[in-house]
Every structure is written in C-alpha cells, then in structure tokens.
Amino acid sequence: METTVTLRPPFEYSWWVILIGIVLAALGLFLLIRALFKIFYKKKAPKQEAPKPEGYRRPMPQHLFIIKKKYIAGINKLRSEYEKENLTKRDAYLKLSLMIRGYVHEATGIDVEKCTLNDVKTMGIRHLDELMEEYYVPEFAEENRAKSRDFVTSCNTAVGVIREWS
Image (cartoon, rainbow, N blue to C red; front, side, top):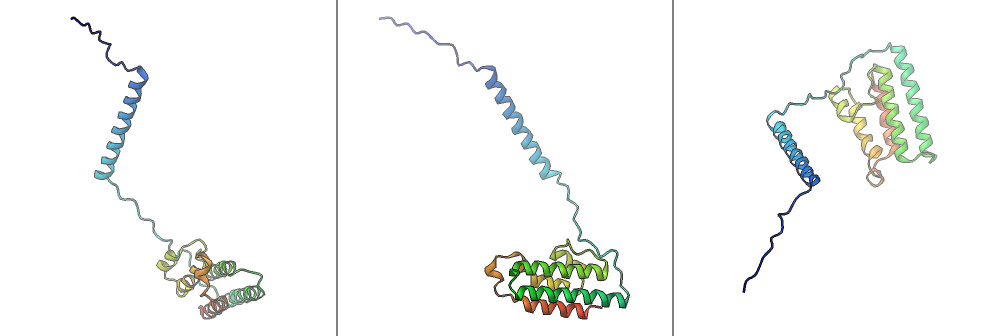
C-alpha cells in the first residue's frame, strides 16, 4: 500500500511581520547602546549650589527699627486672627513662615522667600534655619503630626528673633 504525502509550502511571513521584527531589533539595539553609553561614559551632572547670599545689605538702624516694628505688628495680628479661630493651624504657619521670610528679605536683601530649608542652612543666616525647622512640620505635614506644635509659642519665638536681629 502506497501513500502519498503532499507537503505544504513553508510558513511564509508577510512583509509587516518582518518590518515589526526589524523595528523591535533596532529598538533593542538602541536601548543596549544607550545603557552601555550611560555606564561607561557617565558624565557627572553639575551640582546645583544653594543660592548664595548675594546682595546682602545692612539696613540703617532707623530703617531696621521700622522694619522690625512692621513685622512684629503683622505677627501679632496673625496671632490674634488664629486665636479668634479665623485661620487653621496650617494656614497660620504658612503665613508666619512667609512673614519671617519677608522680614529677612527686607532686612538683609537676601531673597529667601523661595529657598528650601537646606538652602537656608547653607547660607548660615543666624536663627532663620531654626525658625524654619520649627515651622516645617506644621506647615507641610499632616494635621496629626502638627498637633504638638503651639502656634502662639511659635509667634512669640518669631517676635523674639526679630527683636534680637541686628
């Protein structure tokens, strides 16, 4: 008994399947070259330095007295608004932080209003980094972490720092 077998033609790829294969192979090769380039020719990124206290100017004593008086009055007004419960604790700390930064800007000419806590620490501005650390948690953290902070005490501390500033 004789049997006949008919063979089918080999599996043929259409042109788009071949194109997809070429594109994927090229993409893989590109990613491999890029990874090797990053490993062997890694260029060090320039470090971003903290803003330097350029433009520092010491105000005249009579001007400093006026600036101090203005910001102490503003902090006292803010404290009374908080005590009347017109402000939440977080909003009060945000405003207090802005007032302290505004005071430093007016008193020294250094723009610390957009600086982070680390930037201020590297500048070495006396007492400002301590104040910012005190306000940092209630200003940015969740409400339950800020409960241990007393806003009135923080206001008194800020007023004390402003009075001692020279």
